[in-house]
Each structure stands twice: as C-alpha cells, then as structure tokens.
Length: 189
Length: 160
Image 1 (cartoon, rainbow over the protein chains, first blue to last red):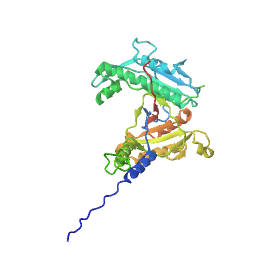
Image 2 (image 1 turned 90 degrees about the horizontal axis):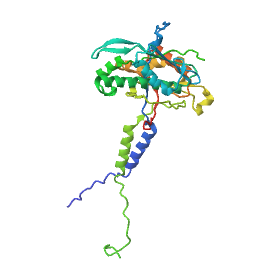
Image 3 (image 1 turned 30 degrees about the vertical axis):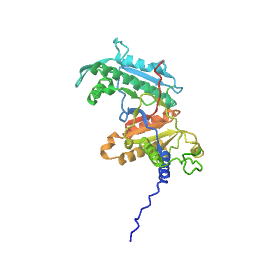
C-alpha cells in the first residue's frame, strides 16, 4: 500500500509585511530623530561669600548684555559679529598693547615655555536679557577660543585642534584656556 | 491574434508579486531602529531652542539629565499660566526643586559614571536670563558643573 507522502503546508507569509509595518509605525511614534547638541561649558565651583579676585583691568574683556539685548565690550557699544575678532586681538595681543591682555611665561609639559595670555573674559548679563541673545554671545566667545586653539595647534603641531591626539589636545587646552567667567548678574540699567 | 496563447482566452495581467514586501518593510524598520532614539519624556513647555555654531553632540544619553525651561504649552496654560516654568522629568517644578532632582539623578548613575554626568539645559530662546541664572546657581550649589546649553546647529553660509 503506497502511503501518501505527507506535505506540510507552507506558513503563510502574506501577513509578515503587515507585522513589520506595525512595528515601523510603533518606532516612528515612540522615538525621536533629533540628536541632542549644544554648547558645552563647565560651571565654576560654588564658593560661599568669596571675594572677587583682583584682576588687572587690562586683563579683563568685559562683555555686557543689557535687558534690551544690547551689547557692550569694555563699556562701548558693539555688534555680536565684532566679538570674535576683538576677543582674538585681546588674547593674542600681537603688538603688546598696554590696554590688551598681559602674557606670562608658562612651562607646559611637552611644549616647553609658552607665552600664555592672562586675559579673562567676563560675561555679564541682566536678569531681563533674553536667553537667545546670551547664547549667541556665548557662541561667539567659544568660537573665538576655538579659533585661537586651532591657530595655536597649527603653529605647534601643524594640524587643527580636533585632528590632534588626546594628549596634544590637553597641551593646547592648557596653553589656550577658555577663560570665560560668568558673574552673577548685577542689575544693569 | 492569440497565436501563441494555447488557450486562446483572455490575456491576464500577472499580479505584482508581494513576496519582497516584508523584506522592504524590515529594511525600513531597521533604518528607523538604528537612526532614532527613544523619547525620554514628553515636554510640557514650548521650546524653540536657540541657534549656535560651536556645538558638541551629547555622546552618552545615559549620562545626561535634562532641564526644560519655557512657557507651558497651550493645554497647560489654564492651569500653570504663561510665565516661564521649569520642567523636570514629566512635572513642572520650581528652582528650589532642582537640588533634589540633581541629587536623585546623581544617585541613579553608577559610581564611576557620576563625575561625567552632564546637565542639558533646554531653554526657550525667549527665556529671560534671571531664571537661567537661578538655575545655574542651583546647579553650582548641587555640584553639577558640567552643563550643555542645548542649541540647534546654525547653518552658516560662508561662500559669499
């Protein structure tokens, strides 16, 4: 007696597309595309009732934003686009101008004696300043420092800052520190 | 003239094969799974982030805590008004809640990750600096010093 050969029915795959489609919908709804990004800064440590350190006037670069989002650099009106170049001039001080930042000799491991600027940027704002304006200025300051680092890296290593090795980046960071001080806001009229 | 059609009947258009449809769907699915991230929490404050060029990406999501600042969305305005508010996790909060929140976030992380914890400040660009400064002071007091001012990439046209 010839036994009938049993054939297994194929699993129907017509609904597979629908299942996958459902999964896609789920992922579209429950996830976001945007990558979080922003300006990275490190805040200073909190110290109670500390006296402001005395810094020579020529070593400060005061950027002030008032409540109308007007900008002043060292007490004079300025435009946001001026900040970067003014900052670079202030830090580099190529002509040893008496009104721009002083330089001190600093021994950095791996680089030797380096002339480092003592300049500090003081970013001041009013309580009524818009956050957007503040970020715009903050961005220009960081851009200025990044360009200074790039130039420094170009001079000493022949490459841009982000192309350097990690220990070389550390050296450049020491030679060109991002000296941005964010004072608590005074009531600026 | 159906000389080559042995049955000589009506010509039928063959159905488009759907055998590859699941494969296409799976490809799309994998694309979405790889390129997106899970939504952390719903944001109850309206946000249009400021633009910046010198931005860094936040690499490790697990090390980031979020603070949202902005005016409440339309559906919450009847309850919370239109004044700028802070949102922590899913709830509206005040500046004084911040320190507890940071301490909680600090506890959640593994010990070796704690020094790398970053706070992402997602504030609307119309926010006044007063509230931002209060937040910053609280963060400094809570020793959460690594901060990321969340901003969108500004496309700069340099070719003029």
